[in-house]
Image (cartoon, rainbow, N blue to C red; front, side, top):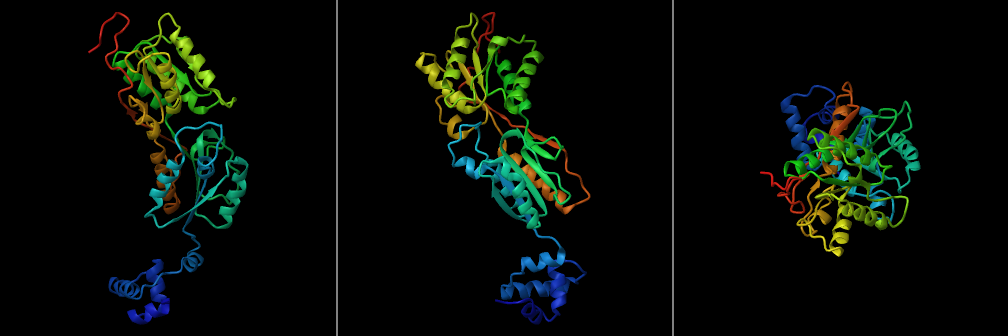
Amino acid sequence: MPTIYDVAKLAGVSPKTVSRALNADAPVSVSTLKKVQDAIKTLGYVPSRAAQSMRSNKSGLVGLITGAISVSTSNSQGPAGLPDLYIVQGIQKAFLDSGYTLMIADTGNEQTRIPGLIDTFINHRVEGLIIAAEFMQRIRVPQTAKLPPTILVNCFDEADTPSVIPDDYEGEYKLVERLINVGHRRIAYLTLDQSLHATAARTLGYCDALEAAGIAFDPDLLIAGEDISVIDDENQTAKALEALLALPDPPTVICCGNDKLAMRCYGMLRVRGVKIPGDMSIAGYDDYRSISTMLFPPLTTVELPYFRIGETAAQTLIKKIRHSESDLPTLQKVSGSTIWRSSVNANNKNQNGETPC
């Protein structure tokens, strides 16, 4: 295996000059730099990352703490939507050509492991740290003087650690706005469990979109479609649907808290002989492609932009590591698009029996 001394001999320079060329820690002429680079290419020399790290006091490592691996292989009955592996993929893409090595540690689906994993990464001298959650939630990040630049993904804490999260308010607002624009006025919302932070944000977006269009909020149209406190919450969904269908003035479209809930509604409505979208329009949230594009008719939904959320977080952290004087933004929200498919009837009649243009 060639050494730095072999490179120096072939390039006709000193080993110290080769070191300067590799680490860019002292001026080297263009011609000398080319000689060193040509010698490295000819010999197939690979610089020692460990040696460079010792000299520069920079490890070139970034840590990622996530539950994506354990959650994707478990049968957890907790909150679930789009797989958070998409977040990890976005992070990996951003680091691909960054020059940093991404180290990943899985929590084993136990938040209590986070402090220990942080300590492990600090001991490995990571230059930055990303903590990603499997669904929008509040977490606790131990505050220590040794903590490197840190960014939270799909989660937040009370210490205002910089975070990147989905804009759930904007996503639901834009969906309801679009439904109103194609003529729907009786818009129901089957929410996810009320304890979820995403539910609060999306519900507010739903209500504000109605208000902006001058449509009075009807509490009968807002019902919890699932309950994470029980193992089988299909009964909760069935009751919610029955309540909506039994209304004197039933909805013309049902927005569902996520695509899995929408898929459940498809089956329950069809058992009752309700045609989609002829008798009832359905919309979801997440754009979970294995659901949204495989249902018939394909599901209108809102993109949960996990990939871009991960990519944004990683790009932000890389910028901070490279330019230590720059600050990380406290909160970044990433919006998802409304994905319009054929589960929504766009020729809905309004309360006066008129079909909008």
